[in-house]
Each structure stands twice: as C-alpha cells, then as structure tokens.
Image (cartoon, rainbow, N blue to C red; front, side, top):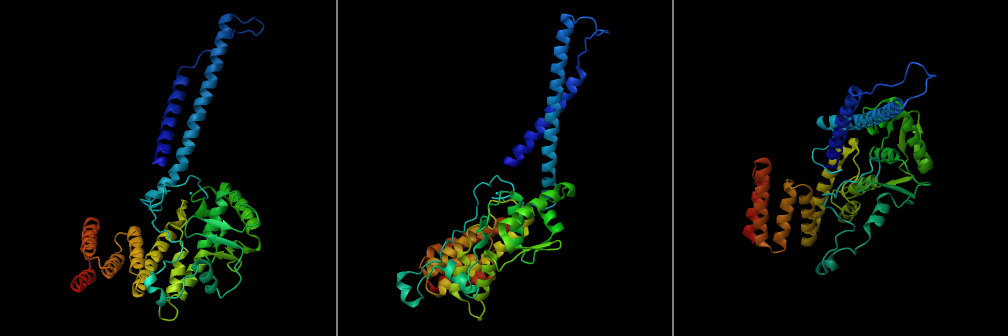
Length: 380
C-alpha cells in the first residue's frame, strides 16, 4: 500500500507541476523596462521587475517539482512493468539491504530455534538432547574448523565476521546473490540481477563500488577470476551449505537420521531473505519454501515414529500455516491427533481441509487422505 501511495502522490505532483508550468507560461508578465538604460527606473518599472522575478522563480520551482515527479514515476514504472510480466510476486509483503524500508510483519510462521524436545515419558528411549545448530553443523562438514565469516539467508540476511562494516545496500544484495548461487556469476549476470533494465553507464560504476566494498569486507573469501565472481565457501560458512549437508546426512544411509533432520530444521530463522525485496530472489525463495515443507513433513513423521506426537503436530501445523494446500501436512496432523487421542479434532481438521480445497481449487481431499481418515476413525 505504501508503494501505491507513493506512486499516487508522485502522479499528483506531476499533474500539479505540469498545470503550474502551463499557467505560468500563459500568464507571463511583460518586462516594463524602457528602451534606454540611461533613463532612471520609475516606480512602476521597479514593481514590474519584482513581479517578473517572482514569476521566474515560481516557474523554476514548478519545473523542478514536475521533473522530480517524472523521475519518481519512471523509476517505479520499471518495477511495475516487471510485476506485470510476472517477475514480482503477486501477493507477497516487502528490507536489510538494498531498498531499506522493511516490509510489514512477515506471515512466515516458522519459529524453530532448537530441535523439539521429546516428552519425559520417552526420554529413556531417545538420544540425549543437544544443541544441534552448532554441533550437527560441525559434524556435517566433517568436524572441520568453523570459519569466522558466515552468511545466513534462511531468514533475514545476516553477514557476520567481516573485517569492516558493509554500508552499501547493493553490496549486501551482491553477497546474497552469490550465497544463493554456489557456482558464482558473471559481471553481466550480477548487474542485470541487481539493477535490471537500467542504463549500464549508470550501473557499472555502482557495481565496481559494491565489488570493492565486498572484497574489503570478505578478504580472500571473495573470489574474482576474469569477469566471474564467487564466494570461497571453504572460508565462509553459508547456512544453505549447512542445510544441504544435513539433508544429505539425514538420508545418506537409506534410513532417515532424526538428529540431522532436526539440525537442518534448526537452521531456519524465518522466510528466506526476509525483509528484502530482491527481484531475482523469487524463484529461489519458492524453491526453499518447498524444501522446508518437505523437511517439516519428514521431521514430523520421525517425531511421530519416536512417540513424540506433540512434536509431530507442531511440525504439521507449521507446514500447514506455510501452505494450506499441502495435503501431506494435513495427513500428518491427523495422524498426530490420533496418537494424542483427539478424535473430535481429527474430524474437525479433515472438514477444514475439505473446505479449504473446495474453496481454493474446487477439489476434494485425495483418496490417500480419505483412506487415512477412515483408518484412524476405525481405530479410535
């Protein structure tokens, strides 16, 4: 709404500026000077000069307002045209970096800061709880020394351990782009991603300024060969790399590892790049959301298998909040409520799922979901 208000205000200013310029041109005063500069000025001529100066100043102010409003509208027009082409998300709120005006509160419901702890009843059957965010992450990379530099994108962008403070918003965005692209990117790819459709004569100097700042902040972890740039991920700890390692460890032996998957879930601090409005990041954010939904379901099933029905229900409800049409999460919730003996909750939740699917897609729950409901009700 704030963007719409800004655009509307700029349009009003443009209209006002244009009307003022036209009116002033039509009502321009006559200069009352006599033909000879040796004649003394009369009172009428002095007043006429004063009115003429005021008219000229008013014209310049009106032109300045008009040009400023046009510049604002042109800048926003590029963003709007990209939105119409489907580049911007259709219904996503709007940052630390680049366009500093943070979005309103995020609808992202994930608030996992540590692995879910089982109930006392199951404590003897389960491994002792640990701080998985550090311990499991170190195990995933083979116990190697943890780099001092770190970049986190599974939540608000965080860049820690730099040798000097990063001030430019474009530099934050540049580093975020390379964190999400492990193979790096060329100069042209980076310029187009950060300043899409803008004049290269204006964006190239900005790019070099951001590259210089990134190199000074990251030191030898910033790699540059020819026109290609990337991060040395041995010298920088990136939470995306930790996520990949833990997901691989969680499925490596053919049997899911609960500790590794809980550790992967503990890496999430919120919506990826929350608080930013990077145009290039929409596809990456959607992919990471899908990864998170799958992870929540896997963790929930493992918790259920370990008699932690409340933990399973918590994971299922987080996934449902992220995507109300993710039917596998609803099935997990039904199974968790059955394990908790909540028969009435099972029927209410199924009815809620059926209503959501009908309203959003005009569909009914799948055969698998209906079969699970019948089985759970029969057991109850």
